Image 1 (cartoon, protein in one colour):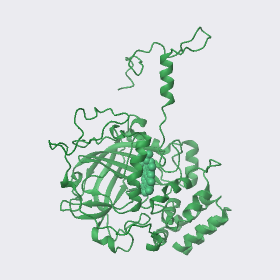
Image 2 (cartoon, rainbow, N blue to C red; image 1 turned 60 degrees about the vertical axis):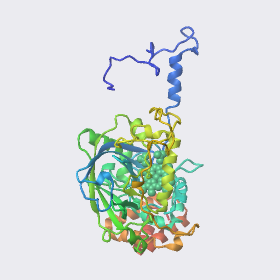
Image 3 (spheres, rainbow, N blue to C red; image 1 turned 120 degrees about the vertical axis):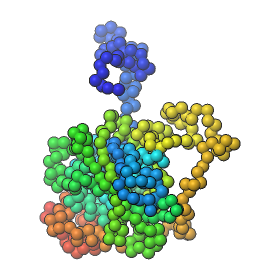
Image 4 (cartoon, rainbow, N blue to C red; image 1 turned 90 degrees about the vertical axis):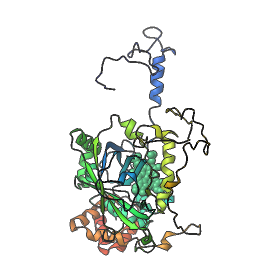
Length: 488
Ligand code: HEM
């Protein structure tokens, strides 16, 4: 409906005309309001319920619609209909976000950026719910709620607390890779348009012959990487707390449509057993020399949502949204996420959140579930179709043709300490550090010192020691920078 159409009358939610939207119904000009002011009651009652829970993480975000076009041949790896031919297209919705801040937080903060993509494919919604970094702080989902406590506000002061944050990270040495990226010059992207995106986890692809490969997804910005220094970001936030939202919205409005190329790294299934890095460890990347990037397609964002709440706030992404030919891996973190996102959506939006237009599998030919009822069921509830399967009519039958090939998994159920399995968590952050120019290394030292200032001396020492294990010059640089600004 156009908001420029001024000819229609104002009505109540039930469609009755509203006679007066300025003056409450009162007993006399100076008397109290009457309980029978139905319009006042309706207006206030609706207003009182307008806020829904914000996302526990990634609460502040921006979204846009667009199109994905297949430009590379992935048929040797996947049977997904989307990738069946070069030139295939599907609609997309993408939401970018910061992680730690609340719904009203400033955009230009030093933080990871969420990079959640939805492909409305003919076989259902495929979501790659990634970040702008290829790795994460740890590799066991049991630690995720602890991360929220570490990066969000202190329970007493309601302030962000460097000791909570760094005390947690430094006790998890596997976090150093991610911490190094976040504290580097890439830690504050200039905008959402100027950063890469990563699926981060290892996923799998299964081809028409039933052969499985492990894959990683990389979205590479076509706008170029651009970042802000701490100082630039501080000044920007003083002028504009919504700099990322403004940048994305304005670019799309003026027809300057941002694009990312999608690439995959592909590992044959059997390689996982003896690859030199644990291939399902989210704190590590796969070497591009071992597994080069293979072009898959291009995503271009060309439409701003008509209503932020309807599309962006109500979007419910989940890594559990996979389609035939694209699937999961034994990555423990991914396993944890498969539960958490649907669970969060049921809490935040309700059991029928799939019906909200942005979440509906708009590209799918059919949506036939026997799920019934639940709050806010508004799509006809499958009418008179009896909800039984099997039935005598072959109605909505399961599709064995889509079964995945079996997967060998470890036999003993236990709580395994991954550090006993693989404690190689300093090599990759060290490699990353050595790839940086001297200027970038200095930025890393200084950003770290500013961020860690306020943590206990013991915590700062522990971080210096972790950095030194990655590279002595990394430890030394952070130590000096901390001394200069009095963080140590
Ligand atoms: C949002 C849990 C790890 C990327 C969320 C939300 C939860 C959550 C509960 C809010 C969802 C909602 O209300 O709709 C977890 C858990 C994790 C985990 C339990 C680990 C066990 C990760 C990782 C990534 C990631 C590794 C990236 C690789 C995101 C993104 C969003 C998000 C992009 C925002 C989605 C959106 O735009 O709506 N996470 N998360 N998370 N998470 Fe995670």
